[in-house]
Length: 211
Length: 389
Image (cartoon, rainbow over all chains, first blue to last red; front, side, top):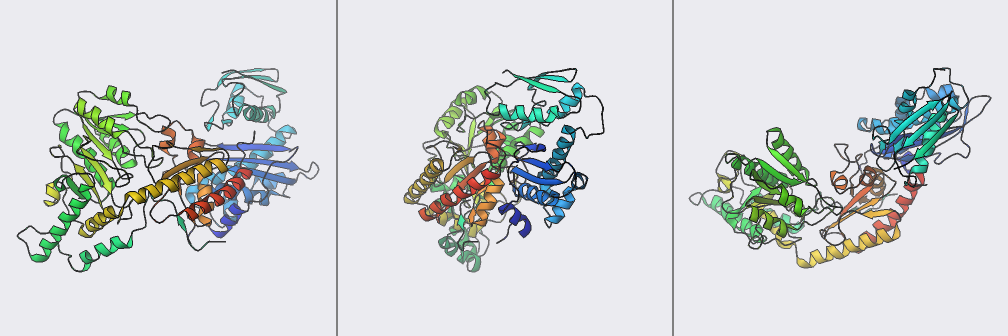
C-alpha cells in the first residue's frame, strides 16, 4: 500500500499525543480558519519559576500533516523553557517527523504559529512583554484579523463584521455585526477577549453583538 | 492493521474494468489491429471498420441515436471541449458569442467557458438551489439573441443531482438555442432518448461504467453546427481527426451492453442503505444533493467539524477508498466549487465525502464502511476544536 505520508507522520496522525484543552491554561491560542482548511488550538501551562512548559495540549481541525505537526510540537515543547520553545521552527517539526510534502507546508506551519501565539499570550498576560508601545485602534484591528467566524472561515475584519472599535483609557468597546444567538458567538467572544485583553495596557474589553 | 481486500468507493473517478470488456477488446490488439480502412481497403482494415461501426451502433442506440450522429473521442474531457468550443466557434460567424452553463459544471466545461471568456466571448454562470438544481426562470431570462449554446450537466459529478434536462431542452428549443448535456455520470445508469428530448449534444464516457479509460463519445444531432478543431485525417465523419481507438470503442460498446436495469436498481438500494444508515448513526452529518433525484451510484455526505483529507486517509488505512471536496485533497488546493455552489460554506465543503458505487460493491462492504466511519468520525471529532460549544 502507498500512503501520501511517511510512517512517522502516519503514526502521529493515528495516535496524536497531548490532545485536548488544559483547565486553567496559562497561555492559549487558536490559529487558522476553516476557509484555509485548517485550525489549530494550542494551550500551555507554565512553571512560573523556571519558565518551563509544564503541560501542553492541542486540538486540530485539519488534514493529516496538520494533526501530525500539532502532535509533534507538543512533544518538542514539553519541558522546554519558553525561550527554547519559541525557537521551534516548522523545519524542526518537519524534520522530526521525517519530512512533510512541500504542498502541505502551510497546513503544518499553523501548529508552530499556534505554539508561538500561546507563549505570546502567556507573556502578555503576565506583563512579560518588553515592548510597551501604547495600543492603538490599529493594533486591535490587527488582532481582530486573526479572529475567525468558524462558519465562514473568514476573519471578522476582512468580512466587515466589526462595525466599530472604541478605545478609551485602556477600555475597549467593539461592535460586532452578528446576532447574539449566532452559533459561534460565544467562541468568537472568547477569542476576541483572549487576543485583545492580553495587550499590556488594556484593562477591559466589552462587546456588543447586533445583527 | 490493514485488511486484505480493499473497498473501492470512488467509481465516479474511474472504475475497475470488467473482464468481459477486456475479452471483447483482446482480438483488436492481436488479430484485427489494422487501421479502419475505407470500404476499398484490405481485408483486415475492412474488418476493423465494420467492428468500429458495430460498436458505434451499440453505444449510440443507448441514446436512441443513429450511428451517424455519434463520434468517438478520447473521453469525456475531449467530448466536452469539442462540444463547447466546436459550437461556439461555429456560431461566432453569426455573431452569437454567448454561452450559458451552470456554476457547478465539471472542470472541462467550467474551464472551457473561462477560456472562451478570455477570448472575448460572454458566459453566464447559472445559480443552483440548495440541492444543485438550475433555476429554470434564470435560464429563460439569461437567453438573449447572442446566445449560441446552453450546457447543463445531466447529473452532477460530486453530489449526483439529476437536472431536469427535459424541461431545460424544451426551453432551449423554444428559444432556438443549442443544448449540450454532459452525461458522463448518467450514461446507461439513466435513460436519455434523443428522439423524445430535444438535446443537441451529449458527452459520454466508458471509464465510469467498467469500460476502458481513454474512450468516450459525443452525440451530435444531425445538422448541429460544429467546427472541427482536431485537424488531420477524415476519421469520424470528418468531425475528429486521429487514428480510431478501435479496441477502446469495442470495449466501450461491451461495457454499455453489460449495464442492466437490474444492476442500476441494485446500486440504488446500496446507495440508500449507505445514506440512511450514515445519517441515522453518525450525528452532525448533512446529505449533499437531493435525497431522491440523484444518480444511482452517488452518495455525498458532510461530516461537520472535521476535515475530509483526514477522513479519507483514515479510511484508506482501513482499506476503503473514497474522495472528498476538501481543499487539502485536491490538486488545486481549492474547496469543492459544487458544495460552495449549493450554498455550503468552506466547513461543509472540507468535511464532504463522496462515495460512488459500482458493479463490484456489495452490502457487506457498505456495512463495513459505516462501522469504520463511526469510529473514525468520533476519533477525529475528539481532536477537533470546532463544534464543542
